[in-house]
Amino acid sequence: MLGVRPYIRYFHSSQYINDLANGDICLTVGYSGDILQARDRAAEAGQGTKVAYTIPKEGALIGFDMMAIPDDAPNPENALKFIDYILEPKVAADITNYVYFGNPNTAATEFVNEDVANDPGIYPPQDIKLKMFVSKPHTARYDRMLTRTWTTIKTGK
Image 1: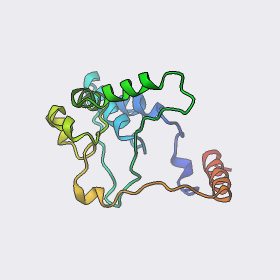
Image 2: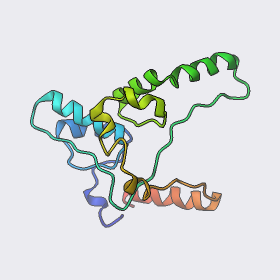
Image 3: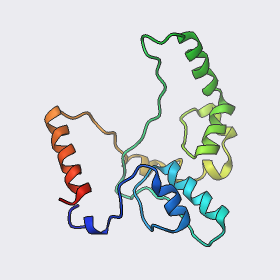
């Protein structure tokens, strides 16, 4: 990574959305929904910038969205009602159609826009899914080493 560090403009978890859409950067590693938002923003701007998202053929980290209710939540019944609402098929599909993150709610599939449902960056084909992996917890020692390594990469020192 240190060998390519001079060619990395910045590390940021959201700035790349507008920078891709504006054509200010040409490559990023980012969240699928963010890249697809950048694609739409670029198209809306009509300046000729094209943004595409792809999952590497080698695979990638699979993401999970979740909802949880803390043990000490003041209104757990309302939280459950909210979760039930989000899980309604039409609501889940509307969220997917807006943010471009796939959802596992099979009852929502019929309400997902065809272009979204058929986008392999949102709903990867089975051969790509088989190459995706889950991040596993590390030891504290490993986490310290990882933090130090990323600090070195980010700063270039």
